[in-house]
Image (cartoon, rainbow, N blue to C red; front, side, top):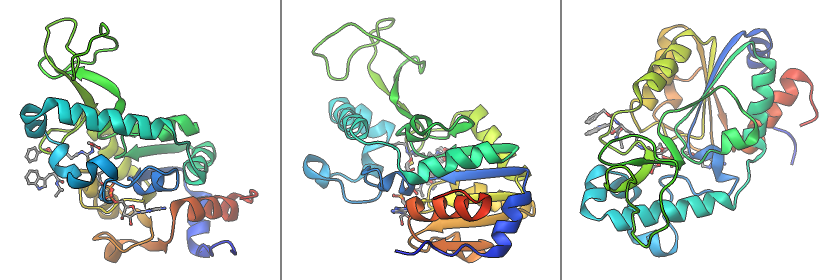
Length: 250
Ligand code: BV8
């Protein structure tokens, strides 16, 4: 399949850009085999809607079910590897003076790919915290309890992710808003642009005069406002963008 054509105007802007921000969603991990957030869940989890499971209410109602859903997702992610889309962003970070990678994903694949300047808006599957004290817990005694208990207070442990209805980590969100407000180019990659406040970030970039580039196989609510819409998979378009901008072999 021939390499996708990237508009020359975008290549010129990216070649001369000093400040670039990238917002990624579940779509960038799709080619690694991690199902996107709104795709039907597989097997045991098919009958659950992620938006109903990813809430504090669901955890209070059935902590074991929610803990086991995240344990299943951790296991799924452990068996995947970063894909060409993640790796293209690692190369972009090397090429841009001030680069910020803002991700909604909790799978940790950007860090495993080699990205450094990462803002995890919604936390990380592989970090655990105490539901009562709301502070990270690195380890806890082996036990058959599901969820396991906090070694300090005996409360339930939970994944250190941001659930629907929960506030995003304030410092991370502030840094993401600053990156979006000061970027010359903001890429929105693999996100349905439905979840807030993350979905506000490309609009913040637009109101500050940035070029906003959407990379997604389907249109989203952001598409009509984006400066450029590159339709397709992140794992195909991002390597082509890097190759055509900086002359690398894709
Ligand atoms: C908050 C962690 C303040 C957990 C996630 C009414 C009442 C209460 C709240 C709200 C409300 N209205 C709005 C809100 C706010 C709410 C919200 O936005 N709801 C939405 C559903 C309307 N947001 C919140 O609650 C946030 N907190 O606002 O606090 C507050 C507090 C109380 C009351 C009001 C406000 C917290 C949001 C964070 C939720 N946690 N994840 C977990 O993962 O288990 S969000 C979850 O959705 C994932 O992180 C995911 O990243 C994110 C967004 O989804 P996407 O990444 O976009 O994934 P999706 O599947 O949707 O799309 C994938 C895209 O990829 C598709 O477009 C597809 O075409 C594309 N794709 C597919 N293949 C590829 C591809 N792209 C590229 N390449 C491919 N190969």
